[in-house]
Length: 625
Image (cartoon, rainbow, N blue to C red; front, top):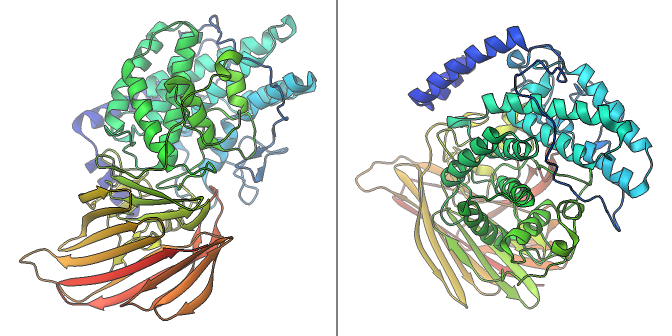
């Protein structure tokens, strides 16, 4: 019954044109199953369109002062040493070699989360093999690349298995292969390897060109697919691919971004993912002397202005919405500051320094000529507050001595398009960071596909720093990436000044009850949050329960507690948290800072029960040292 209900709600989210398109896709899939399925990805007869990389990007391979990257690790904690490409990384299971369209990977508790396997099969480690070769000049890295590549080809027949279940995954894999191809020495002894990788790239992208994401599924997937199609199209002289990608990407950026630079998916991570993709495409077109739409640069500028304001002087950002650590280009295989890399990458297009850190990433050494890499730009000023009324975020900032304070307030829509796939039920959610110490945090994401209970846990209202009523969510979850009834948020007032910021917003997710939140930041160290639950005029209400939540960062602990007053310490930062009319409860809860990893922390809870038309909850936060 659950599956039937999901199909019903998913169908409701589709337009007539989308339904017709999906019927067409079913026909295409049937043709694939007869003509292409189970053949080799290196088979030149899979598609009519073939070709070689005849317009190379000519990427640099002088990784001066770089360290060798890790080639057998994903997500910085999972070893891939001696693992099959079908590994689940969960109880030693393997994904079965079934036709990819019939493979049931969503909600499969026995097999785990498909996203873990996808990360491995994105083949970010292929370019790292080549980076290691150029650092050491040891051919063992090319030999290992050859072995891994041909083993993968033999083990993954076309359209069979977990590696072919998502068109975006094919595109990212093709991009990794393409960067690898660019870095393989142009030597006769590597001719066959280069030829085979080129053929594999063409077959992957022929498939993406037909099945790229559309309609209600066209979130960040569409942009990534089009960027890779365009980059490959330029290098392989497939003009129709370039034209298609430029036109589709231009339209998608208009549709998926608010006019103030915030991506409509309401995921900070996907904001950076899209910025990286667009910046890479611009660099590829520039390298070939080809123009790109001015609109792209306009979008990128606005996205950078918002994203860079979120970043503190340590290069940290608060994550909001889904975060799965996706990226297009990784030359480390280990932890690095992805957001700062993306800001640096974009800085060389916008000609403005958005990065607070003085570090040159290996990706930039590879992508940019030395004279461009050494360019200096005017610094972005990130320490003033800003409200983005279209995108639905306020970022309140100040300096407490030399300590940087960043408070975020989410008054945005749930997410993009009819399914709002990557949104969380977090209207009027706040986060607080002081001098790099995360005081109040977003709980994270943890997983996508394997366990709907955990998927929902990290999207639920009562696990975010906002108000939940009757233990219900503001918006209605209908599936892991599907929402039904949605809360509508509204910004009422934004007054930003040198000494005080005042933001008022509300949402209707509990109609006829409304939740209004007033955030007043008396700079530099006092924050007053006033929550009001009130009833729409001429409506009847019954008794209701409510709870306010504040999730503490993992380094926070309670050093003093009274009924209405606690002291929170995180390293050198002390915060006093008090409320006049609600007893304070401290409870354990879970958060997920890394994809696939659950950790424990504490949260503050303020609870009450009312049957009146209006309820007030006043919370005061004072920053000490």
